[in-house]
Amino acid sequence: MALKADVPHWDLDQYYLPDSGKLETDLALMRTKCEGFAERRGLLVPGRALGPAEFLDCLRELEDITRLAHFLEGYAALAFAQDTSDQRAQSQLARVEEALTHVENDVMFFTLWWKELPDGEAGPLLEAAPGYRYMLSRSRAFRIHTLGEAEEKICNIKDLNGRQALQRLYDTITNGYRFEGSFLPGGGAGTMGREELMVHARSHLPEVREGAYRELYRVYGQAGPHLGQIFLALAGDWHLEQVSLRRHPSPQAARNKINDLGAETVESLLRVCRRRVPEVFGPYFRLKAKRLGLGTLRRYDVYAPLVPAEGTYSFPEAMAEVEGAFRSFDGQFADLALKVAADRRLDAGLRPGKQGGAFCASSVPGQTPWVLANFTGQRHDLFTLAHELGHAVHSQLAACLNVFEFHSALPLAETASTFGEMLLTRRLMGKAGEREREDLGFALLDDAYATVGRQAFFSLFEVQAHEMISRGATPDELAEAYLANLAEQFAGSVEVGDEFRWEWVSIPHFFHVPFYVYAYSFGQLLVYSLWRLYESQGPAFVPRMKAILAKGGSASPETILSQAGLGPLDDEFWLGGFEVIEGFIPRDQRE
Image (cartoon, rainbow, N blue to C red):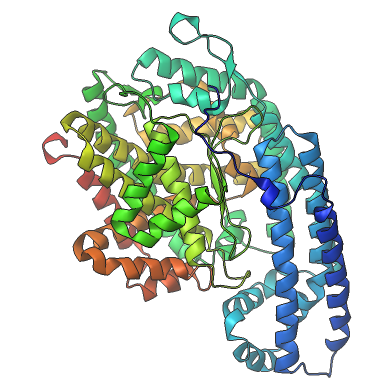
């Protein structure tokens, strides 16, 4: 699918002009700033109390260094994402990551000093730095998981040429995949990238959906054992560092700690999902099979439309729908979303080598976020835009926070994005005819499955996979476990082909951010609760929602939600989200 003229490409020259030398200048500036900060080490000696003014000066200097580091990392990551096959971008990303590793090691002495400071000395300093309080408190919470300075530096260097190198390798390999179109009517022509291929996974023709999935996992399946070895190495590294060295009780516990969530909250979420996903979505899948005229829904059919798509959207049309959806909620929401495109921070075209999927990158507060998508003109691309631009709205509302507390914890990071999708659904529903409204209703349930059910079972598999790897499991054994995971979540309501055993190696989050995926289930069920409040309160809810988003990462997820009148995050809370999902199914069509 060719790049259309009306589909935007971001302008990274806003970051650095090619061959300007500014990147090198900023790298050198960062080194100079670190050398200056290192002189602070002499202030942090036993028997010398650091005064509040000196402490604040240290924090502000560290914030300045951190902001520049995030800025540099953001550029290198974006340049790599726009063409993962570009050797110059690969080398540049590796060089920036190496520089950032040295920065982290150079300033580490201050963080270690703060963690080890006796409570009696830390308390007055904490009170003197209210703008940094959450960051400082969180840092001390990791005291028992922190190693000595030499060991911490070794871990950082190890990650540079180990974990990070393996992640770049995975991206370079998988973003270079090309897929044959021979399954298409008439035999197809040429090859396509993953984003173009997955358009056909939502075809109204059953044989085309099947062909797209078979082709996807033919390619991933051939590479499965090798990609699986990358995953084994990354999982082993995570276990070695987080469990063996840092003494977290389990691999997932390390992520829970980073997310500032109690283990009981995450266990409650996954426990409820494990029980309710088959109970809620099993009847829906049987209903969908009936509406599609199928005896049993196949995995190929899970996202099938009820009616053939009536044409495609141009990119301006898609943006107009998203703008209208956001503006129906709040004018500022729409304006902040449009700012991304107006500032040429949106890249939506299709190109060989471009990173697949979609993301929103917010490097530093005050900078308009960057959004990457792969626009094919299908209706689901509108929801991708609403999702990623929702992230962009979230980060801009939190722009007043410092760089340490700007990014929200992963479980709250999906709040604005999934709420944006709900707004878009409502808008499209209001404009649709009866058949399209029914199709949109089924698409809403498909999305609920994809974001709540599928991601929760991804998380359950990830926990199992890390346990198996610690006992010496092979990629083939993980593939068997993944098939069993699919069998449990579908509980006989969906027929699963054997090729789906390799689906897990096609999920980048498993490789990049261990135990990330439960955040999607968390965020979606949370948004259903927020949506119920919006429907009952109307415009009065808007300030409440914006207040949640403006908190960024300045408090724990549970604290932010408690202040908004939500929670506790127990079984009853998650069950309420599933009640909303069940309410999407028309009463006269429920089993």
